[in-house]
Amino acid sequence: MFVKRLGALVAKASPSALRFGSSATSYPLPPLPRRALLYLPGHDERKANKAANLDVDSVCLDCEDAVAMSRKDDARKTIVKILNEVKFKSPDVAVRINGPRTAHAEADLDALFSSHVLPTTLVVPKVNEPADLDWLFGYIAKKCSSMKKKPTIRLVTMTESAVGLLNLRSIIEVDRQELTESGILVHEGIIFGGDDYAASIGATRSASNHELLYARECVVAHARAYNLQCIDVVNINFKNTALLAAEAREGFRMGFTGKQVIHPDQVPIVQTEFCPSPAQIKWALAVVAAGRAYAQDGTGAFSFEDKMIDLPTLKQCETIIALAPRDMLEAAAAVPPSPPAAAPAAAGTEASTSSSSTTPAAAGPGAAEVKA
Image 1 (cartoon, helix red, strand yellow):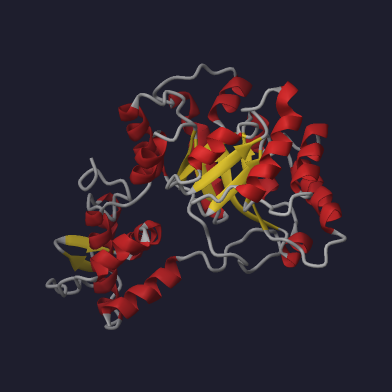
Image 2 (cartoon, one colour; image 1 turned 45 degrees about the vertical axis):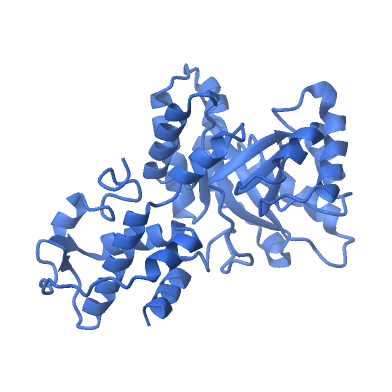
């Protein structure tokens, strides 16, 4: 019975009706996690082969920043070869093209759509205004116009400048109903490019990332408002594992769903930090189970383990469950939570205290009490 209730909760917590176009109402693909998005230089087949067996959520074959101008053509040819020949363990094989409305981007897309195997995800950098996406959708529509069966490609856009940040809402709201109905592009996430953004505002990069705080929070707010993934900045100090773990943990607590990485050694650290701990998952499942029991009696706010729980706390618990890997959910579900011992509180009683609670659920997925 408990496992059935867990399954229903997971289904409810999963984004089954996410908004990815101004007129779209349904989500055509199961969501893919992108806790770590690993960039690989598109012209380096050796690195792609080495990364094929990595346990990483997303690999991204790069045709942009990781490739010198003199190697762009080599990168396109190599990426097509990799797509057709290399079998990645990662469920998400992405390609980052060059900035929209450029000759390089056109050449990138021409090469990709000549491939027998298309990437799972298209990453588009330097999206600064709605016209950039209008161009992208129009160009891909032309490339696919003669196809009998239209492909479905996931789309992740990058915010990398002050202008792009200010235009982010209008960029997300670009009307792409025609393309999404035909299943060609599905906008799933936003990547924040911290280094390019810092350059655009004249800021100096620091280990604390304090100069990026406003922009990071803004990207999270926009992404969450439109049910998109939000992927945090790169840490270029790939040998400083303590700094990387702290930065990933901070991003997770801020609401980011993943982080860009540039070295295979960064992957397990980042993917561990962008995952709720077993204690958090156990707490979330117990709170939700108690909440459902009280809801049957018409109770809103209730007391659980000497904490006041209300709807916002329950929603945070659902977020924790949605972020938890299946094996951790199954392990937690194998031990049913104890029935709530506390009596229901009157609706509204001390409800305001829940917003300042320090329980793992109320404090968010990165609660220090659970995961230091």
